[in-house]
Image (cartoon, rainbow, N blue to C red):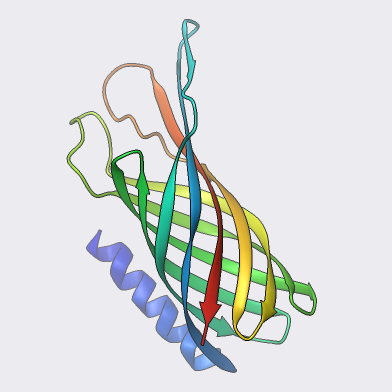
Length: 171
């Protein structure tokens, strides 16, 4: 975990020297977590989506008028479960104000969980957003978990995918 944090800080410091413009912001909205468990030929279970909210902070590095990088730190609450999400979205503006985004997202479970599960998960997210006016924006993204949430000895694969939709303000 310490290595991930050090690498992230080094990456962000490098971006800040390249950035033409730097914006800070706040983000909040709706989140849905959709779990899936599968294994062998007999286990195939899709959990109903559970919903909640997220809120957090962001930094946006404008590298060019069409290309930006936006790391975020989000607190997430879904059905009494608490997570910390750290997405690192690369944003491309095909036209002014409208952007598509993609990048990795780390999700860390904040509460105690069973020994056969990992607290740190990696996902790949993609979505879109629109800069409204006066620093306000809306966006939505879907994140697919790429690692196995289950680390035990059985042949089981467990994943949680997330849908985020919200509003934010950059200043």
